[in-house]
Length: 128
Image (tube, rainbow, N blue to C red):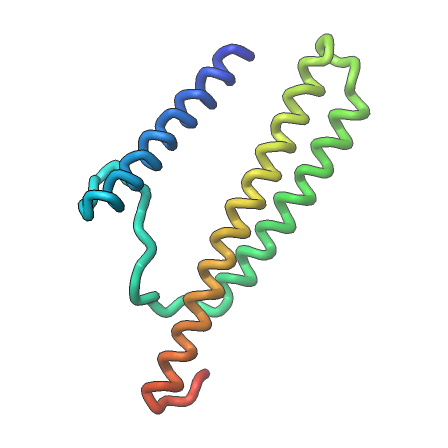
């Protein structure tokens, strides 16, 4: 089971590295490959103003979950020869990773919201 978890992570990492490589090659060649990372939109679409707050709430939830998992791992250190505790720690690390990814999403949503507000004020309309 442990080796399968490692293999799954490695396969995902290799897939991401290939996508990053395609993205860099596309930047050099002025091309767009279907397996490249998604490009940032040049003209941000309006975003519901509640979405950044929702992302923040999800970040907080991931952080709280990570703390709970670490506490449980600490308390159950002797279970399963240490495997249970190790897996709980790994899950906590995944929650930390999810929080970082959500923080990226939150920043992008906030930027879209700001851009939409600027666009509204330059169009002569008052921001909502």
